[in-house]
Amino acid sequence: MDIEQVRKTAFAMPLTNPAFPVGPYRFVNREYMVISYRTDRAALERVVPAPLEIIDDVVKYEFIRMPDSTGFGDYTESGQVIPVMYKGQRGAYTHAMFLNDHPPIAGGRELWGFPKKLANPTLEVDVDTLVGTLDYGKLRIAVGTMGYKHRTLAPEAVLPGLQEPQFLLKIIPHVDGSARVCELVRYHLEAINLKGAWTGPAALEFHAHALAPVADLPVREVVGATHMLLDLTLGLGEVAFDYLA
Image (tube, rainbow, N blue to C red):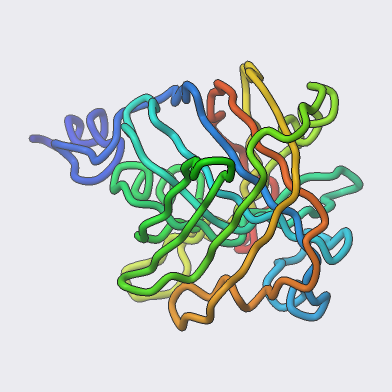
């Protein structure tokens, strides 16, 4: 391949066989269990990067089943999302994500800057309970439970949150180990088709782990839970703030 062919062909790594295809990335029957909980304000201040502003001491812990996703396949994800404010607009900052499928790990990190790491999350119904788990290696580090479809939620109770901007910190190192890209990325969920939403009693517990430190944002009080089923397109992002400019 000559230099011009490389320029025209290059999309993602590896050059001749990328780990994921060009988008758009559509998700069908994407299922969420989101448990909102109070944590320590000081713990949030240690992990939320400026110029994002912390709204309060609430964190959203997510378990997400994605059985049908364009180019990424069938996988499950789990992680922490923190409500924030940016230039007067509410949004959400993704602090940690763990999943069991290589293409969305590679694509999520390279395209958007999702903080994805390889682990083994699950989300399933156990008789009358929606159960989410997260194992890192052989160790279980998170368990969430929720009463299965106890009360239906109206679309207007959940759609505004899904339509808010989402924020990520994208970091790509230079060959000398310094940061070559360090950007606050903003993206949106698009073409949302909400098929159902429910709430009910919920519980959440974490276990300490050096390489998957979800417990560093400890659970002080569970304040709510939402179970959702929807289709959506994961929109490509834009740079909201360049730390190296």
